[in-house]
Length: 619
Image 1 (cartoon, rainbow, N blue to C red):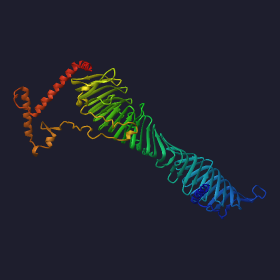
Image 2 (image 1 turned 135 degrees about the horizontal axis):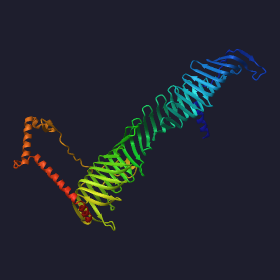
Image 3 (image 1 turned 60 degrees about the vertical axis):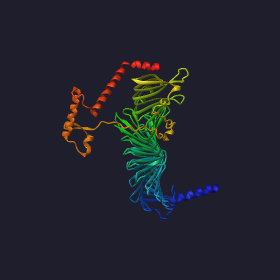
Image 4 (image 1 turned 90 degrees about the vertical axis):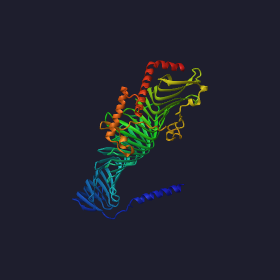
């Protein structure tokens, strides 16, 4: 095992050695170009050095070196320079310091005190710098500052490669830009592209936006960030975390990939997905792939899942800002006290209204509610009222799990007080099945079957307190003698197999069984008409005349006059024996329906309390 480790170590070292040039000593001597005074001091501190003073100049391997005074060691091919030390290499690099030691064999310059290294558009300031001319790399180890265009980088230790123009900074790294500040422990910086490569725990602050990452790239010119390794972006109480994040500060667009978590600490909600797109300037958000929206405003967390989620923000950066959230395709929601399933959902924060479309179903404890459309209105993050539109059906499963209280109607309303149901109202073609229980042992005694037009139920502590109906047909059956066809309404359907059972079950879509879907009931609409020559003409008849022949204006007018004459004759009694047209029949039937409704209203107004008392007696 030890041999294998040593072999692996030797392989790694050999690979690292191949990446750099081999250091070879040069035989080229340092050439003294000029000195005002040159002496030897055989009895001084440097007996082997040639003492040079006044405008000293050297030349070695294409580099020119200047200083005020120097010690030249010819045997070791080196020198020590003092005062206003300057080194020039070509037209692109210059090195300044107060003191320097230069080894001609290794081509290594050690500059100290007030060191300034300039290379093209980059300037490095430090107090101690070793510049390796063979590799073209400068090292500083007592703190340094590099200025590149608008970027200023400060660290305790670092290096700069003049060939690749890459810089590496370590320990207490700080990159300052007029638009942001980056702090980290390790940073690679490319001065050609102004690209910062983050390889350690880092923080980027830009105005109100803060980025936390341990690995990534930041383009300081284009203000774009590519972040990896569970990075996080924060802005005004909003946080986005993901395995991979892409952020463009100029456009305000950010994208997240894999295990993305978007959290709004102000509104106490969170959105998880595997892909997330957000524009902080417009407030538009898009999420898909295992998208889950979570709400923490209540005691229990609400989980909502759908294939795709979109959030639109209106009047952003104003006091009247509001948002509209769209969740569509296979929506499933779970909270310990309420569950829901639908095809699509819209929530508007302006009026705190939540609307569920296409086969929506909600559950609360042992209750189920469904219809074509369900509207829920919130108040202070608590349900205030609900509205079920078309084919409304409410079912309550009793304790024996065999019997159900049921109400079906054209539409239903529910009113809540502090989150508890207080009143429900069913309107239009109301059918109800209700079981009465014995107060002593809660056993079922009777079943009431009710047909009416309007029904109101008043609740307290989730128990029925008062039941009111207008003119109705009521039948009471003993439980043991209940007809089979009356125990369940025609629209009865119990969808317990669709109901989400926990927060993980919202990802498992289960649709309705064949034959249990809501009926497709066509809705009546007013005919399109327009006025032509003083006569009301149907658009359809105008566009599609019978037998392909257009009716003339005179014919239309004559028919209208005949219709008017018939109506006037009916009202005056002159044409009482004339046959009624189909339109007259419809008009008369409508009138009768109106009177009937009025009669029902009168009965309802005069006998309201009596009806409620009679229902209580029946109970």
